[in-house]
Image 1: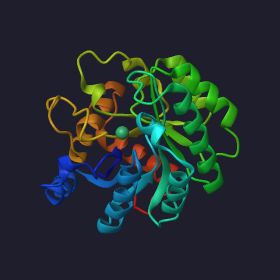
Image 2: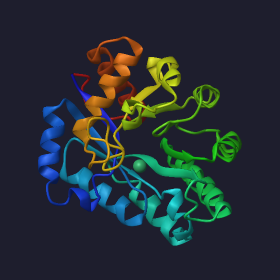
Image 3: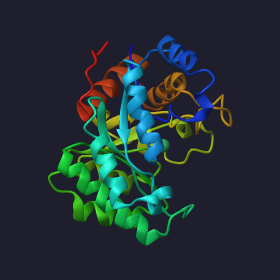
Image 4: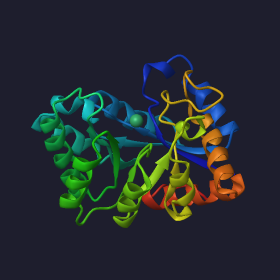
Length: 259
Ligand code: NI
């Protein structure tokens, strides 16, 4: 069995002390590939470097909506240059976050559109972060969603009607640690998403699944996420792993085997 952790932040200093051990534990629990996702310039540079250092790591470059106000034309230029590195598989994480509002909303919307254009130009998929901004996010995607290479709604937590909209646009939906929480509300969404559009992730070091909730998360724990989703859907973990790994290969063009 091979799993792909489609959304990790391996660059973060939480992993500086024991990154090699973290990678070994990931392999030991069946994780064959990890996609490490940038959220600002520094982390995007580091994601590319980690993809160089580790065979099983791929990189995504972009700026999180929290840092939208840091985005200058020069920074866009550097991200574009980084996107040409051989193991960069997507642009992200980009989107809107109206929950914490760390950058002004109008700036978030503008920067989101600019990154969608970059993804279109580079013909790379997008990794989207959306929190409390469903209406504006879907409106921007509706306007911009032409000649795109597809994408994933990361750590999806929306209701079924939003899931349906995203699926009709060709998006994959990715689920992480929250599916294991007792108070996770959208179990019906996890059950209804077609297997052909499902991805798994950790978003580590954040959002550790049960029984590690509140602790540092790491790629090995994507197995707990996969087990929970398999249980909710009444299928075995091997089938879920095979399907989600095939989906990750398809979306991101990963150069990995299926087993
Ligand atoms: Ni993230």
